[in-house]
Image (cartoon, rainbow, N blue to C red):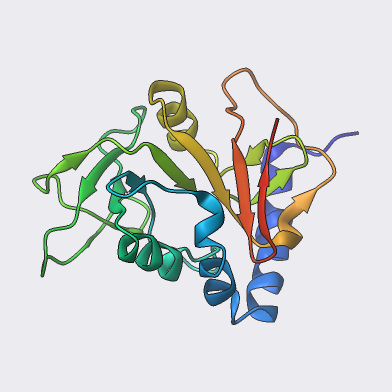
Length: 183
């Protein structure tokens, strides 16, 4: 019997906590692969602020910004809506969002990313991800023409994930071991 997504999420959270504790240098290793993403100067990259033991893209985003990319961050605007992305004005502070995750304020300038860095709990070899269950990234990916790159510890790879019709496939996954594109 295949475990439910809920059960898989619990297993994946536990595994991710172990991976995060074992790789305190993860963010630096991830940032070392920035060039592999081939982000054009001035491209808008939708990043995220890592929450808890999520794979942290902070140093990667800083490196991409240093190479000329523009970084935008997601905000939950409504429960069943896609994420909205905003540019962070200098000196402005984040606000805690609906899930306690730091988010932009609604009045910050909006942006439409051409690349989305996507957090996850697990991913499979075909490019599907197990998210947190709210559907925010799947709704966003379904409505935006952005390249979707999962950000993960290499150890978050699983043999297979259950899929539903609304589950969107990633274009690539970036781990501390490098970039893998999905055909």
